Image (cartoon, rainbow, N blue to C red; front, side):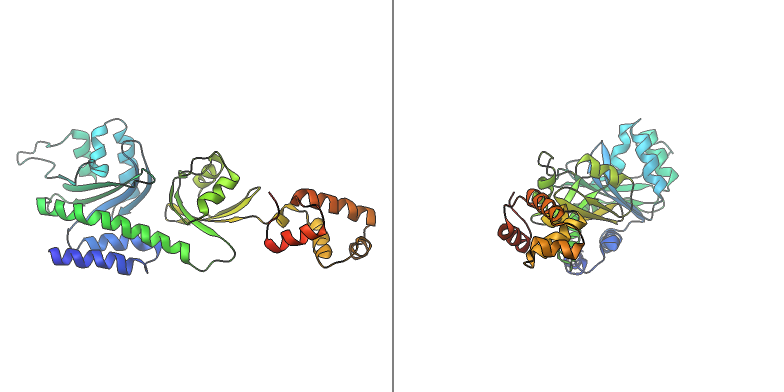
Length: 322
């Protein structure tokens, strides 16, 4: 079994890089089946006892997690069914005794019975950077044998590799061919950032200097809650968001100084960069030389430059003086 486990772990890292991000969790749990058999399960990310930021259900209906979330606020004993415990893999064996009595609290047993769950194996691991936890819980029906101690040990060993392989899979988004100078980040529907390409954090700080570095600002969080792909245009950065299951791939770039200009001001800027005089620019745009002068003054102010030489240098560099 140890040899099989090692093969599974190596496969998670090697083949996981090539798996599509929206299919990875299903594929990865299927690999774990080779060492720990189970019928259904859940892979979630969140804060223990508070909320789940991201949820992947394996052979379970969405109702499983919605009913669990409602019930656990009334009876916290249900938390262990999904979140496990902080120390080691937890096995809930045979929810009822041979004489039909509940071995665990009634709400937990009732929820399990509603979804034909008789045994559970729950493992929790924390991400030291984001402080979020990964919860990987595997379930068997009552007709199957309970999880054994050696299976708990196998899960204890495998789950950290499962999580790391998932992180590597998400990182593949950072190295895909990109259209333009974009940097990538991965976040969930609550705005919690899980992965960030080098430099992406600094870009966010350009727009929101006081915002904590591990979560998105409220205005972006509110947009995430609406779902779907979307675009944000800020004062200093532009951002595109694309869903990956219940996570989002964010692509960020610094806005060019030229983007601050009006369409007419951009035209004036291009003519100036070509060396045209104010009178020639006025003739091309069919406006007066006085109007050109007003546009030029506005352009210099917006781009924080003092003359045509600095303007051209700023345009070539892609940015002016801060």
